[in-house]
Amino acid sequence: MNARLLKYVLLFFCVVSTPLFALAALEFPNLGEPVIIKMTPETVAPGGEVIISAESFLVDLDRSAILWLVDGKPAEGASNKKTFKTKAGALGSEKIVSFISEDSSGTRSESEIVLRPVELELLWESDSYTPPLYSGRAMNSPGSNMIAHAIVRFVRANGATVPEGDIVYTWSFNGRVFGSASGRGHTTIKIPISGLYGDDIVSVDAVSLDGLFRATMNARAPSYEPFLVMFPYKPLFGIDYNNAVSNTAALPGREEGFAVIPYFSRSSSPRDRGLTYHWTIGGVDVPTDAITPFLITLALGDQSAGVTSLEVLLENSYNILQTVRRSWNITLGVTDYGLRDTLFTPSTEVL
Image 1 (tube, helix red, strand yellow):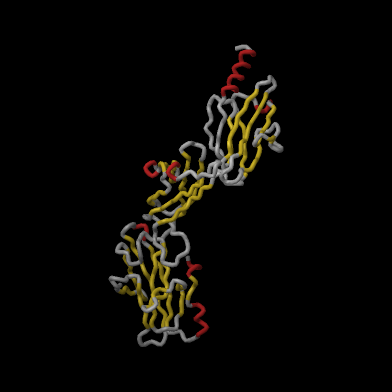
Image 2 (cartoon, rainbow, N blue to C red):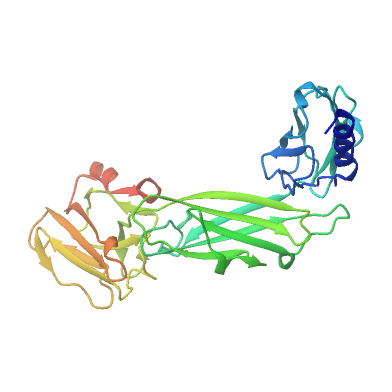
């Protein structure tokens, strides 16, 4: 092939090349295109910064004159550079980025992308147990299920929002695609946690049916071993969730009730039939109430004051990995008011 024929072939590629459209690094490159435009990151929020770069296996960009245009105007500081930075507009806006190059022989290459900023929130929590008034996230634990939900906002230039039913969601967990949970309008996924303690990665890729919008996000979801927290309990007032009993507590009463709550356990409540409580007081096994096995009462008897160890072993029939044990040293009948400062620890410091 002589030089003139090669020149015409390259010109043919440039003429028939279809412009490349993308949303925040959404790329559908035609392998016949001389220049491929890439964007980082893949998902750009409104007003977010994006790096745009040009690559080619057919054109020597290092020896070509390069011009970048943003909405028809030259991009500042991008002349003769293969990479430059710009910012996405507001949600629902479109920003056209054009690439033009010309080599020493006069061969011209062009490509174009359209920046359409998107918003994506990836929320997750576990169905593990947390008590009332708990303001944190229910964490994953072996045997529980993680529930992830994607909130996607694709807004067109005319202000219309792409409905969830017109978006295809692809869900992945630790690199494995969940095909059965993916699909059109599948905004939520429920994933069983079967492994030991550690971190899991849940990912979602959302693409509009017309391919103009795309958003991708990952979330790291750690798993925890369930743990026990003990709270004061009064028959008339119930469980005092505002104060957690510390490992060593001194109380003025001669009789005190306590409730043990299994945080992040695979259960529906502390009285779940799948939970078995084994209590010991001073090393001696004590029976539990069949209806409220998570409650226990300590009493002094004839003594004016006394200290004892209180221990509970919790077994979970749903998952043997959720066996957990904890102990406390409890003193009753304390008359020195100053010691009352050590009665309880705020529950937020224990969790």
